[in-house]
Length: 635
Ligand SMILES: Nc1ncnc2c1ncn2[C@@H]1O[C@H](COP(=O)(O)OP(=O)(O)OP(=O)(O)O)[C@@H](O)[C@H]1O
View 1 (tube, rainbow, N blue to C red):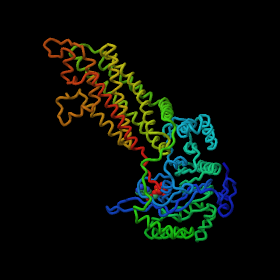
View 2 (spheres, protein in one colour):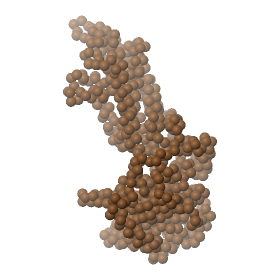
View 3 (tube, rainbow, N blue to C red):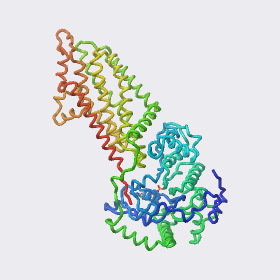
View 4 (cartoon, helix red, strand yellow):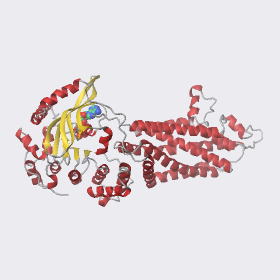
């Protein structure tokens, strides 16, 4: 990392940049992105009436190849909104104006291919190493028609080298609970996954937030260097950069209250403000000084009015300076009056992007999912340990069932608990995993990385076998310790029924996790619905006696079908010895009749369970598709 002394920094503002990598971009460099008179409004409520609040007021500018531009402003100035508008990621509200990519209107599908967006929070798989993260990203994002496997691997190595990640190559990403790479390295991996595709435009939202000054400087320096080397146009929002970081940028957009107060070379910013009477003190960080003079001062009514006036004056002066004032205000008016004429447009369907074939995508995702699952020891051991523990507990609770009258209740109890064990212990831990992975998927999908189907099927084919393995341990344990019918046919039919119930639970968790955006809400709804399944499962209340208003629940209750199948399977052919003078069930058929569990045959019950599994899985997929659908406003 090249070190710049503070004095050098100070002298550079008025003079020539000293580092060749920071040389000004030639004016002949291609304009990669141009934007003209961007106006963005959102609907808010004022005194219970709808009111359109303008967030961006007619913003104009351009980004050239090789140029790194900082968007600076105080909190709420509109930095992220501007970045999102330029990168095509605005959701809701009305956006008008013009954005051109290499002089032509953008097409959502094509634009995504040439842009990279690094979000503020780095959502990545914590158990994968840096190398694995980048390798899977390269497999998923680079087209097989353009890159061979070895070229993909070369690309990963090049990015690791460019972003100085060699030392962390084999370190896991980590998260709040597992130690992994440092914050700076994590940010660089995030940037690396975006750079793999060799984009023409790079957007970064607050890439230095949460990093110490050295890591922040390294991130910005590397981004600048890569921009120059690859002819990338880079735009990043940044909150009060240090003087050294400020100096790395070629240009700066100073935003206040959604208006541009300055857009131009970083090197001339000090002089520009000095000419207006705002001289940055010699030892003050210019970025701090600029943010200071363009921030509203809420300490008193008087100071607020004064600062508002100052911001207005600065923005007006800049409009005058840039020669855009007349055009901007005229079009801005037009934008605010005419909704119909605004360029607001939501593209529900994007032009089809070239993609790798479905099976390649699926197998890459499934490989990544299995790797993550096998490394997730707390989860895996938790699943197996709970299966073992519950098998022992329930097995010994109903230890060595006999064939007397008392065994009927115990047999029913054991069968019901087996059915229930395919619900809560499967759904709750896997739902936590699914929520995390779904969010990573939504992030990765926003860069058009892969299809929703390949993600969804990959999850299904990872979760289901893991749940079935844990459930097999449980089933074998309970079955033989409690000594349910020792008959191979009955054992395997019972196990098959149990697997079907497990499939319903996996479908159910995928449905809840896809339909309900918030994990907190999902964690309230999922157990509540499972409890209803349990209550109406056929053991606590006889289905025939339940009030007709609630009786329909049995039709959609997999626990009831599972319990009925288990009971028929277990009780068929059993006879019970009754004590003298005691009323009791003579045989299994009496039990099935008494509990109204014989409405459907075993195979019909299994079919109904499978149908419910399919309904849950299809509904889960439909919800996820709907969630993953881009809802961006496009210009
Ligand atoms: N969809 C929206 N609905 C309502 N208000 C919005 C919306 N989008 C942005 N805003 C408002 O616009 C202003 C600018 O938001 P933006 O996130 O762009 O600010 P920022 O400069 O990035 O701030 P920070 O540095 O705090 O992230 C804020 O006051 C924000 O509340």
